[in-house]
Each structure stands twice: as structure tokens, then as C-alpha cells.
Image (cartoon, rainbow, N blue to C red; front, side, top):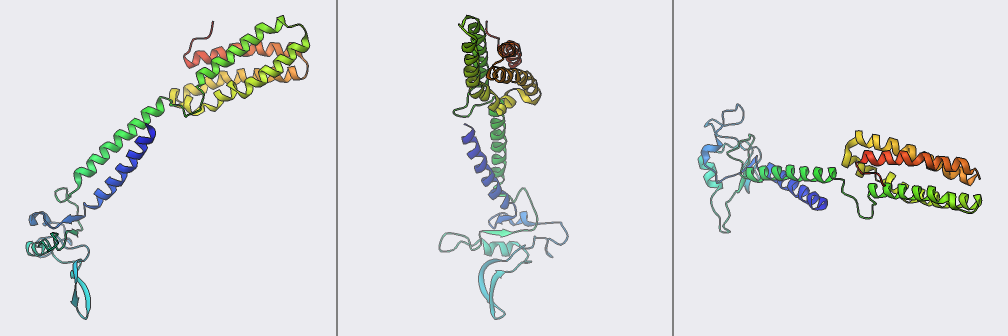
Length: 258
């Protein structure tokens, strides 16, 4: 959906840009009275706008070929009538002329421009709504699922350690299982930063990450202690990490596991 909205936004920008140009390049078929102007320096002696740039086919003039109506030509009804004459190809001799002054009444593509702006605004609001919803990219783990996985593994490890036959087995289990946890669920949660910000806003994201970072530090210390052969410290850090992740889960708005 975001991709489709992105394409629509670019299309709207293109249509709006082209439509904006027609505000000053106006059809010669309009009512000549629409070319009247009261702005000093922009109209001729009859009160009609002056051409801002040359128009018409080239004609011989002064030993050279120049457009039939040079810049500064007053767009009187007679001049506009000649420009608007239909040729053998079914088109007017001059379809549009460049005028130096804006007028909503002369703007042929005003509704295209307005429609593009409205659609552009709606597309922007749609993209913002999707971003606030925290849409996950393909292949990205949901942060709530990742956090639930962290708690499930730590609780299971804490409960299983006392029943193991030797300290060696306990240390090996902590190093192996906590190390795997660091590379999977913990890493996935940390990588979901953009999703968390879009879902909860920067303020709530900061509170969530505060408790998560505390739990992650305890897990890292548990792994380091186990790797150094200090079982008591490793077990204590696992015990202390669990409440911090439970607090993170509460801040996410999910109920902690039983």
C-alpha cells in the first residue's frame, strides 16, 4: 500500500507541475475580455495584456525570420482572433500564449491542479497513517513477539538450571542459550527501532528502550560471567534481567506471561 501511495504522490506532483505552467500559458480561444489588465506595464494602450514571449509561425522580418507576434504584442481581440484561427490540421494557428499576469479565470488546468493537490494531501495522510501503524517490512520480526521470546527463554532457562546435574552443564547451557538469545530475539527487538517509534512515538519508545536496555545489559553480564565460569553471578543476572523485560512488556502494552 505504501508503494502504491508513493507512486500516486509522484503522479500527482507531475500533474500539478504541468497544470501550474498553464496558469501563464493560456489558450487563445478564451474570451478576449479575459485578457484585460489594470496592472501598469503589463497591458497595451487598449488595456489588453502584452505577450510575455514571442508566438506564432516564423515570418520574414528585417531580413530574418521571426515569430509573427513578437514579445510585447498587445493581445487585442483582433490579434487573438488571428491566433485562434483553425488551420487545415484542425488546430489553431497559436494554441497558447505566454502572458505576464496570473488570472484564475484564464487558468485552463486549474481543476487538474486543485485535484492533484487534494489527492497529494490524501496520499500523504495515508502514508502517515500507515507509518503510525508500525507496518513491518517483509522479513522483520514483530518486536512484541521478539520480547515474548526473550522472556520465554529466560524463564525456561532459570527454571531448568537447578535440575541440571553439574555446574559445567549449567554454565554450558547459559553460554549456549543466552548466546543464541543475543543473536535472535534480542537482536530482532533492537532492530525494530523504526517500528517502535512509528507505533508509540519517540517519548514512549524511549521509556520502552530504557527498561529493555537494562535487561539486555543483565543478559550480557550473565553470558560473560558464565563464559568466565562464575555461575552465581551468571544466574543472578538472569534473575535480574527477567523483571526488566517484564517491565518492557508492560510498557509495550502487552500482558506479561504467566
